Length: 431
Image (cartoon, rainbow, N blue to C red; front, side):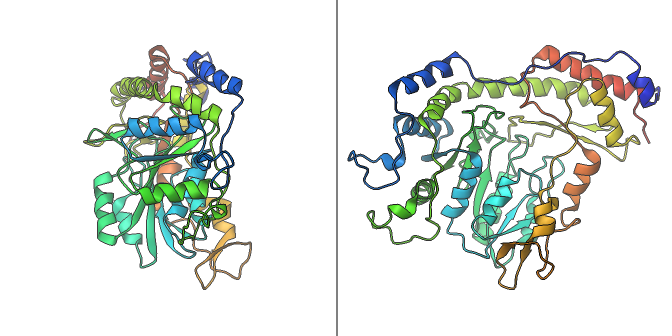
C-alpha cells in the first residue's frame, strides 16, 4: 500500500474533470399542467372565511389543490393530506394540531434540518435533544426513552438521508408513554417499512416538495394523517382558522390562530405530475446507491449506508462513515483529497443544538417557557456534550454524497467510485 502525501496526490491526473448535471425532475408534463392553470386565470382559490362568497368551501383550496391532496392520499394510502407552501409550514401546523401548550417538552433529533426544531419553539414548547443511531443517523430510541419526563408530550422523528427511523421501537415507546409522534419524512419520501410507505405510521407525517427533493413543486409540502380531527385542525391553522371557528361552531380553539400556509394551483398542478414519477425516481436512486455500495464496501475502514431489515432507503443523501478505529488519516484530509479528485462530497451535517440561537439565545425561565433572549439571567440548557454520538460522528466520521443535488447516471457513479479507490490505494493510512 502506497502512502503519498496530499501534494503528491494532487499532482496526479484528476479523476473527475467535468461538472455533474444538476438534478431536475421537471419536464414537459409539468410545463403543460402549469400552463393550463395560468390560462385558466385561477392561480389560487383559497378564501380565509366560512363560507366563501361564492357559496362553496374555498376555505379548503382550489381544484388542483384538492386533486393533488387526493392523489397523495391514494399513493401513500393515508386518509388525509393537507398541502402547505413548505414542509417548514407543515411542521408548524402539525405541532399546533397536537394541542401543545407552552412549556410542554418535545423530543427531537440534533441531526436534522433546523425547521424540525424551530416548529417546536413556534408554539412556546421546549425542544429536548436526544442522540442518534450511528448506523442510520436517526434518533436512537434508547436515548429518547431516557429523555422522557412528565412534561414530554411528543416526539418529532426525522428520517435522515432517506432511511426511516426505527418504526417498531417508536411505536412501542408511543404506546408505553402515551406520546404523540410526528414523522419528518422530508428526505424519505418513497421509503417503506414492511412494504408500506412511511408517513402514515404515527399521528402525522409529511413530505417536502422543495426544489432539491426527489419530487418538487419549487416550494411546497404536505402533512399526511389518518386522523379526521388532526386533518381539520391542520386545515384551520393553514388558513386563518381564527376567522372561521365561530361560524363553524368550533369550541376548542387552542392553537387555532392561523397563517397563510396555502399552496397555489400552479404548484399543485406540477405536484400532480411529479407524483406520477416518484416510483421511477426512487427505483433509479436505489440502483445508483446499490452500485456505489457494491464497490465502496470493499474499502477498508469505510462504512457504507446500512439498510435495516424490513426497510427500504430512498437515498436523498448517500451517507458514509469512517471507521476511526481502522483509519489513521483524518476525515478532514480524506474529504480534501476527494474534493481534489472532483467528488461532490459533504463533510458536515449540522448539529442543531450547537447552532448559535440554541447555544446563546434560547433560554428557559422558571416557568419553563422559552424566550428568545440574549441574557445571562436565565439558564441555558443546550451545550456541547448533550448528544455525544451526533457530535463525534459529525466531527470525525460522517461524509455524504448529495444524490439529491445531481442527475447522476451510472457512468458518473463509476468516476466517483474510481476516485474513492484511488485515494484509498494511494493515500489512506491504516492502524
